[in-house]
Length: 470
Ligand code: GLN
Image 1: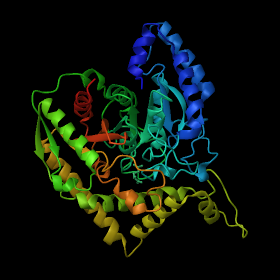
Image 2 (image 1 turned 120 degrees about the horizontal axis):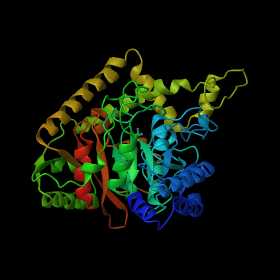
Image 3 (image 1 turned 90 degrees about the horizontal axis):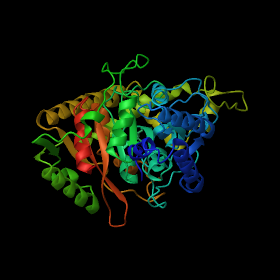
Image 4 (image 1 turned 180 degrees about the horizontal axis):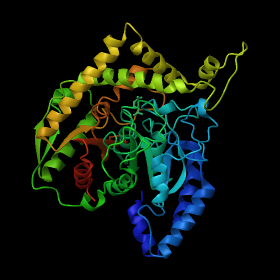
């Protein structure tokens, strides 16, 4: 896989052009997308025009930070004039009238948006089998899932259909597919990247994340889209951050990595444990001091997440009533809302709406929702305790490598358990990154996750950069 940074160097040396790079990606899409199903909508004409504009800027010697970067965007991020379906029948023909803030920033930075990436419907899932437009397949081995919910974004990067991609991460949906597909995936601190124009799933958990082939490309993309946005009420007031200059700085002579005690890693398979131990050794060789931190609430993270996320989803998804957005279905008796929702939403989305309504209903609200919020605070406090002693927290991104298509789709609970190492970062609001760290005996990628304290993306990326090795 070729990085954008390598492409940019070649472009500056006039060894290639943005248009040639785009055509190469388009022909790969042509060859592979039918099998992999990573991209739902292509943006060919606009992409070609933007690539030509980028070549002009390079020729003039004034390229912008992402000039000519070919990027796929998860299809739950609003793109003006370009279909945004959330991989749901209810938004099958929905064409937004405005760009998300991240899209505006990509355009201002010279990126070439090649198309919209497949996902689990409304970003609900861990395998990308919940899309109304068909599952995404893992480019490394098409019998396997790519991970979800940003599976199309991760697969598009891994299959060389684009340089980079944007996804969204509510409980691991950037980090898990990055791990399964063998690419880098970053979930920034909650509030760091504007959610304006990101179709809401769990508003207090959602964050737009970045995929790249290298940590450097991922950092470059993150740099272009982060920073305060007055159109997002939960946007953090930090100005735009530039991590790229600090990325390659040598690591501090001594830094501390927290890890889980072995008994909290019991559910992990042997390949994952082998790669995990290799990663620990590598961190030690880079100067890390390793400490053990028991996550006191590890057994509570999945139930807590699935209460908060479904509660927020049931509220957010009430806007799809057949009146304001997307498709409208009229029943025999003239009824609209129930008919539209019954036909428009898939099984997993309906399950979430029902659980969410249940945990918010009077009589159960305190027992479930209020309790989940209390546990969420304890998880947050536990992160504060870890990062008082450690710079980063290392865990596997997932307990196993990718599983086979169909293997877990009949068992939602087994699927939810896949998020054991990722959801706590969203509950606590801290940043996390998954980096490719090894392969399983049968050749599937394995990712390791690093997390850091709030707003410490610079440190996180710096350590990730050295861990992967430039
Ligand atoms: N797998 C989790 C879920 O289904 C996370 C999804 C996400 O991060 N968007 O809720």
